[in-house]
Length: 166
Length: 257
Image (tube, one colour):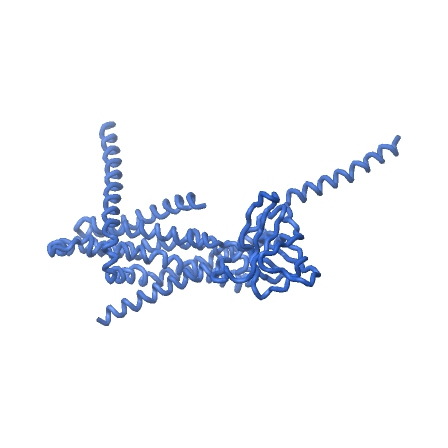
């Protein structure tokens, strides 16, 4: 009888530890947050380019996380990407002329949405849309822009040099 | 000369096919018995204790050291690219998706698989299985099934414990010893690891659990009723489980990546 009790105790401890480890891995290691999904209010914003933004990415103001990206979809009416944001209920005083931009955390970090406060007296409410948006920067576009501007700089310089030698 | 080689080849191919067929039939029989065996949960719990709780120490020790060496090697590698903050995500993904399930399964095959196989083999050798059959009790139902199910239940839990302790070890070396920023370590990890990554590891360890337990109970149950036969069953358990774990790991990774 005492032996079966010891077995039961050991097994119970093992199972408890196993599930605690699993719970720890799911809740602490991943960016998923449970139970907070329905709280807060929703804002939408449309972007020309979302880059590698993913659902679950943070929404921040001045570096403070105030919410999460809820969903990203393509809107065929506007031909832009439509991003839904879930903002925590305590941050309810965001001016309704604020702007949203897609920024990158560090050189190799993930992308997030940064909100810069506007100066309006009225605030965003549930379902509102952020009008002023700035798209994610695509590295290839940046490089090609840089190269073209370099080429354009060089061409006139070469022409004036040729005229001077004439 | 040539005909004897051909005949040997023919025989070994036939043997391999026969073994595969026997495994499949045995697995089918175990699957058919599963619902009924789950009703007699006491016996299963006893085996969860034998295979799971008694493997805890080796799993935790191994997890700690694997995590620590991952922290050390990962730091050395990432430092060359100047991105040692990514150590957290590298260690977490490596542990959750690969090292956790695979090393746990290999250790499980060595610790619990051999115990199951030699226990069943000895029961066979000492005619205990025949005695159970004499009492009109089906030995597969009474003896084999609880061991099979206990192994399947234990494996994912052991793998989760392994990964958690491993992460602690990686954190110990990376943050405390090598000086990676604590906040960066955890936040990069949280940013990189998705819920699906955790589930991939769990799925893998469930599949490995089924494979390991099946091999152990099959080899033990079908061992020769001699001292040599029991020894051979134990050896075969380790060899077949290890190879099939690594094979299954490749196939699962290729499917899920």
